[in-house]
Image (cartoon, rainbow, N blue to C red; front, side, top):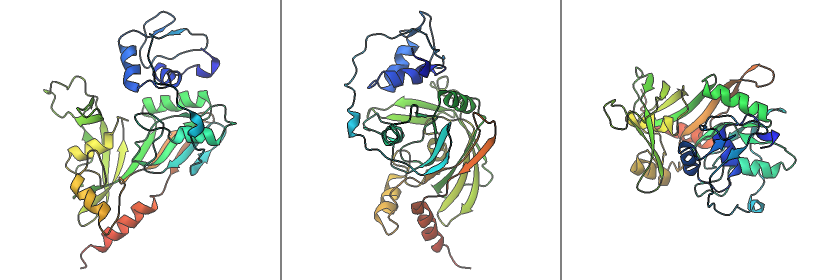
Length: 312
């Protein structure tokens, strides 16, 4: 293994090296003990070091995609220095290729910056979610920022518009979440509120802090801070409480979303936006707080919904 991978988590290292391997396969071979570091057993969060010998079982992988088809693209930059980039990701763009997506933000950014020696995602956002996304430009920055995320030392705040009136007294959603693959082959997440549920042992504790920032006639605009970073956490937590996110194609109100997309409002995206990111700079130690304004489509929807408010 080369110096460029020094300190990287094993799961991230394998996903980078085993091009075409589904994430489910990577985690399965790790859990089964088929992956070894220097002949020793390891876990997904084990760190690899320069000079390590990583053994993997024989795998049949899809042919490596031809990256010449990836278009180079820059994204709106909120912050950049020699250590990291923070961009404002548009809705509808995946952060990376895979699961039927040929390419995402990271592949397009690498294509646009062929001189960059290192560009890696620090974290992920759902394809349907817009907002702040961190990309490391150095291995040391990647490790430092991911450690902050794992130790919950970062602040990640989202704006979410939900159907119905969220109770102002409901400020914390502390409900475990379980990932599973549905009969449709899709990745899903469900809330497991009952500790007697047979799946409770596999569910992971998940905490979202919720504050109502504006009450509209039929909707609530929420400020959501996540204390844990589970897959689809905000989407499932809010839907579990009976207030799904407007435009959510997976956990939302399908008919209401369809009417909003095809009606006069023409809103056809999910209203979830990563609006604020607070973290410690990996090199200087300075605490940074970055923000991204709501996209025009979201602002326009709010303006239209406010006009329907009854006059006093």
